[in-house]
Image (cartoon, rainbow, N blue to C red; front, side):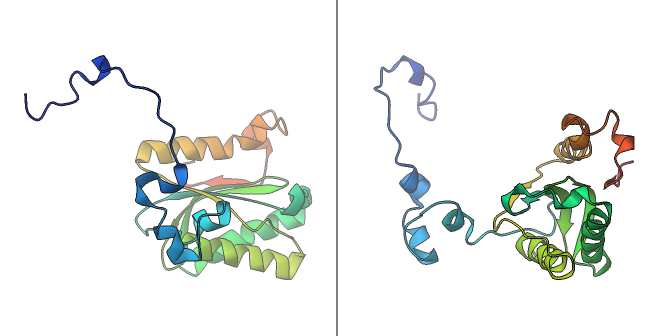
Length: 179
């Protein structure tokens, strides 16, 4: 039965494998192009790429998780920074929420990649409001419209899940194009 070699694979006894994650998919040598062997998160994120046809969920946090955005005016300044990227044509925001110590931003990059967008926002808020940020950020590309809608719901419900409000309408630092 050529072409169906995995049909009875579960019947073949095998001993458990131990995986060397640094060599998974043959990536060990690729990381040498980025300054040496993989040494953690910063090496993993070198070479991060974004696609202008993909919507990304970005999350970035303040340094030491200081709740800078408990202040109404700082929260509005953060929203202004996100809006600035849209106004310049660098991105199209789908949804966002400004939490006291972190930001969730569902965004489609246009003329800047996601790393540049986050850098611009962090630099603007530091320069004008002395908000200090953690160096890294989390990103996830949406694979379908359903995943994007589900992520947008997750983002705007964040203040309710954090028990900051009883209803998302009571929180003023969010927006979503679907609503």
